[in-house]
Length: 241
Image (cartoon, rainbow, N blue to C red; front, side):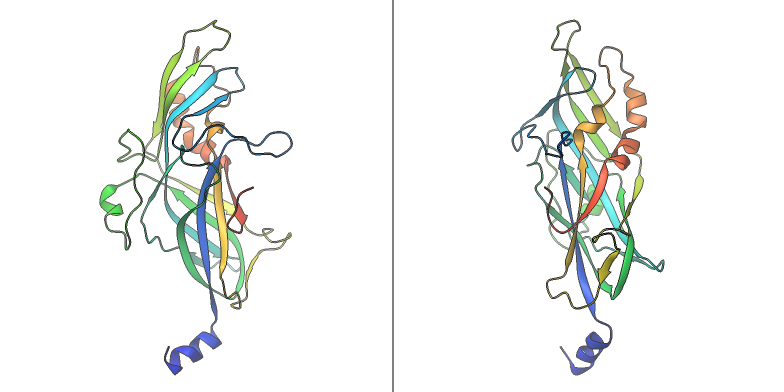
């Protein structure tokens, strides 16, 4: 580092904020995370309508992230690996590095993440090796893709093969104003190891309220992003527990 750069670093210290992505099932009444399936295996659970759901394919695509200071200044995260087609059958609670940004000293009150269409042409332009697309279905041009089966344990209804998907885009705004012990996320410029945020989502929430004996697939497709937005949350640190 040159003497000029060193002086600039002292006068305008910055800290690297990293962003990781994760997923899991819905917590129980005690706040404990469930085990709904092993890595690379179907997720199996019973929804609130009594149907046993087998989630055999699941990809949710994140395409951008931005953090906003409490003063209203926005900073875009850099995405070295491009858009992230998150495989919902990967290990629950695992963290995948998604993005990072160098932030000046200050307080930060908002995080925005964008769910958008997977485009292989954009992935190929990534600075580093792009994320692998997992699963057997093509997700090109899609934001959310979910597929599997549903069985009525009572035997009153026949089993169902279902598929839900959307190619729409959604920007989810997450609150950081109370992220650190009731206070905003704070950057001092003196965090040698940087700071981290983790954004997670609950994949089984998509199936709440669905009676597979009389469901409307198009109506479910139309509200996928609404559910996803409601089920996306942020935590300070690189961990989900």
